Length: 312
Ligand SMILES: [Fe+2]
Image 1 (cartoon, helix red, strand yellow):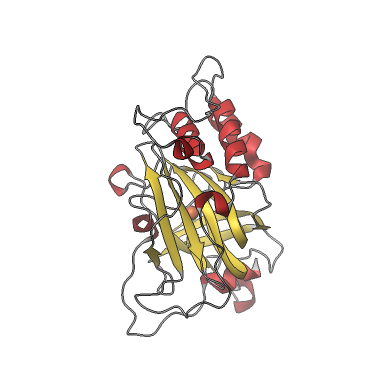
Image 2: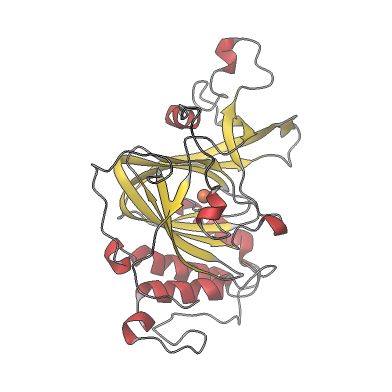
């Protein structure tokens, strides 16, 4: 879509600009994720396998990991989400596999659907914020909530007009729920495995969807093969979303975060043909992507998570 192209190729800061944290570093060793609800069944079917006998949780505040916690923390919705995420994504090599996965995903999605900013003691930010500046006022910040070998969870906060550039989540699942404001999410699938799916440094992809999400929207999902690349932009002011990734980013285990921009088609022979990669101008949803360094106009800061304590 044109809005995607405009953001991805947007202007950069000047030469005095300092390097910034990659997205994965925003979240400890993890990063952002999502997918559109309409793909839930495909997403579940892709990973479900057998569907019997596995432990399933409709957590109601049991102690987590045997640690004593205040009752309000034990029963908090975010604690229930963490516990359910832990059951759904059990660690490297088992994330998303095994019996009962579909049911666990459904339960996790149901719990995530209910989360609100006030549950995490997060106040929606005002539209009039201090201007983005290096290094003290980044366009995006991250509140780390918890991380295990199986999943990471936190909150991304986007200032008005900011975007998380197009990036991937290699071999990972993700679930995203808007807490306040509105975000526009464009999701892509790589087509590398298909004939002609790559051309030198270019990778062929399909723009699966572009849609706006608010706090009343259902969670978005991503999987290793569906909507695994996305760009997330704040629309009409600041926005924030809860983000669950499984397993977490880990460059040492092949799950590094890569950034992309739309590129002209390698077969384009005229400026008219090379336009924006063909996503919308030609009405064709197939595009070419070029891996790029982290864009200079994006970096992610950190800030304390103010919500209920979570034991994962
Ligand atoms: Fe992401």
